[in-house]
Image (tube, rainbow, N blue to C red; front, side, top):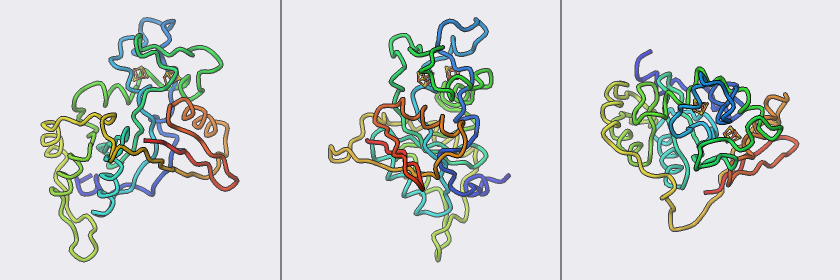
Length: 236
Ligand code: SF4
Ligand code: SF4
């Protein structure tokens, strides 16, 4: 896939009910009673318990990049681009069940641990691959400054503003690995907090419903259950 497609070939905005492995949390971890072969026991920084995937985002035009940059002006948002062209929005706060001193899950092995965590495939952990090092080769993380630079590196159709050409993946890795990311906790535009809503159709399966149980474990997150949509509301 060429790099233009990588950036643009993002399917329809798939709100947070994706069944991708990023959202599933099989046999997660952090319990201390797991076998020594469990990669979770040697995992640095427990990235899976410190960020909530909110949604996949379609990026086709300059305005879409502007929208992403706007999120990144607010606390705790994080944006990433996978090498298959998928843009993702995260809310980067530690789960309230995570013991920050030990890095262990305080509800591990109990009925309170969300199914999503219990069933995450930790032996093939995407989080560890892309977040445990400063720069992964399969995922680029963005703050507002990086998005601003990307907007300058991209060319656009003069009439529509749609993305016409983008730098190669290798070039992006090279450029952004030299730009340290900001601390999402330190942002606070005008010192005000703001709420952002992420609606999806109501869950149709128990598995999908469990994703909302998982979401409720994060501070600053609430779920509004409506007849026509369930809304994840996050506060910055
Ligand atoms: S990031 Fe992956 S390896 Fe690390 S604790 Fe979470 S599931 Fe385990
Ligand atoms: S409940 Fe929280 S701390 Fe425990 S495994 Fe899940 S995300 Fe991590």
